Image 1: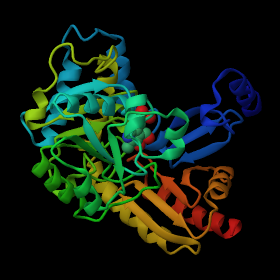
Image 2 (image 1 turned 180 degrees about the vertical axis):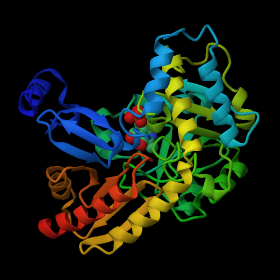
Image 3 (image 1 turned 45 degrees about the vertical axis):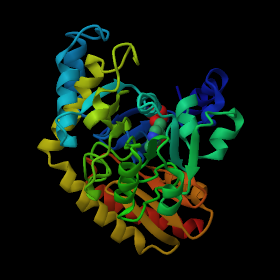
Image 4 (image 1 turned 60 degrees about the vertical axis):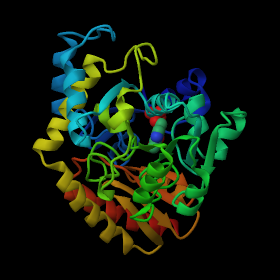
Length: 389
Ligand SMILES: Cc1ncc(COP(=O)(O)O)c(C=O)c1O
């Protein structure tokens, strides 16, 4: 079956909430994917920062295959080794021996869990950032600071106040002794890869310390090594109270986590929260395999090296105003509102990216991207900008 037929059938039977797709993808290996017409693409979007080891990675395939043929699902009434091993691994990355993990499937659910956890402090007010994206369930949407996503669903929870991102004075004015939590992305991904000043997270930590509010860092897009660190905030030297993860955590399988540190680790009591599939043996097998491979292949160091190659190469291209981001989460700001055209032109040339704003192209390739793929991407990008402009 070809692209045209699949896309038509898709539109007839699948809700149009994402807009109609232009192609259907049918197989992939590493960063390379094929559509139903047999055309090959290099995937520089990685399922939106999710396919941390690319497509059909042998380590993930082996771990998932072994687990599903041994024990597929057990419910949360029983312990099993994979969720335990993954939780211990994540705890070790936080450096906090008291940290405890709640597993879920999506970023929205991880943030919902953090939201509910914060209510158990006895406070209910929340401060989040304008432009931030924390998910689309009603609680997570209340945290999300994008009017286009919120407005059709108003009224949302009124206890959430949004302040301009990276504006520490506004944050200081908004947070007080009634604030249960402050939730921030270390880099705002969906808003167009917006990077705050280097001392911003540290300053937010100070404000949270003074008020007693939980500091929640949404690392859904910036976690799992994407920025060259396990969690996208580590460069700041702070320890948050809560970290949320999803996307890359399951190596392409649906897995999310809410990690509560310090005294917040013991806020949830039996019956307070739950998720049928949370921490399922198969998805946690994939998460463990992904982490193991990233460690053994020393990919965090490679990510930093690749960041430099991308930033140096892309910044020189006429039509590029700014290249920002960290590691392999890069926003390319264009001189004009041509991001959508550029995205389509790149797709025609066999490269997948996306345009989170009319002026920004975002790339988030798998951490296994090669130097050759990076240099091909940079030359293609130059060619496409030249054509489009
Ligand atoms: C920072 C951040 N938080 C939360 C989410 C929501 O994740 P999900 O779509 O898995 O619910 C996203 C998704 O893009 C995200 O980028």
